[in-house]
Image 1: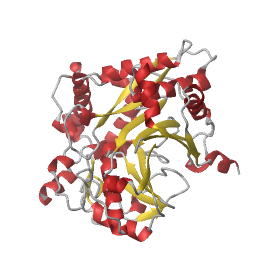
Image 2: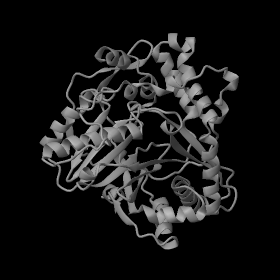
Image 3: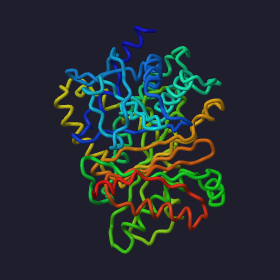
Length: 433
């Protein structure tokens, strides 16, 4: 198995593309966190990380620059834990991080893991966090059991965990059969505002009983994802666009966990985006926004359509001309492609679903969090995760204006009667000092 793992690490496909999209100040990252019943012991966490990383070969890598592609090699260095930075999801500098594409932090009773998206998506990242928590609690002296819900350091490595599922489900098709135009998108409304200094980010979290929202969704005949995405679109419209004539439409990017459609146990990145379009040249209601979410997600979750998008994603890597093009030219090509495919978006919204822990662990883990990084051209995002019967919404933004979040939470409390616990890092206050 070791030889096969080493070979895979050198042939990683997602690592070929994501590094080309890193800017000087930002990178495609997300954060998962857990709040415990006691303050975090740095030394215990360090030992837990040392043990956990040995079980996850797809995370135990460093990024290398080849003649034709970026690629991963096994990282023989030891990862280390750090005290959380004041700046949420600050860019990972590989040279200062011993080459690792993730960063484990701690603050008071909270453990955080920041991931560069090239090594994992939210589902894979959650499995790593759960394993780290299990190991930490055991080392701390708690009697916790995995109950087959957690990958432990003693769980045998399964080859399916490290497969490239994009390649597994790739089907060779003619370029004319691929949905290239659908993936391009169109010009859309972009949220503007005063940026924080020093790459700072504001964070507001809203936490409430999940059943309250489920009841609302059942009454409206929609899913939680459709409702929350619709409310986000409606909040953007009401705070930023209402009364301002525009031909623009809002475009909400929603990651799709492909494991739910294409059987896969990979811990690597296996997700695509649904692009939800919502026309703003009309007087929108919440129901209209929810309907746009429903229509887009139903279309984009169709298996054959997703299969074609997988083929489109992989096809570029398989073209002979791309394989023989030097890396510096590929960099220029992908910069152009990113402008073609990646930039038109109003915001990104990701619902990670339900985080499940064994009962023996859950009594020590009080809250699970999920935060998306922001960029200059995508300054406001929303991420959702449900844990222990409570839904946690994280609004991350690189601009000082928090009107969208205020409208969103106010709707939950005043219109729906949901009791919401709100927290903030008050970065706009610190930034003004």
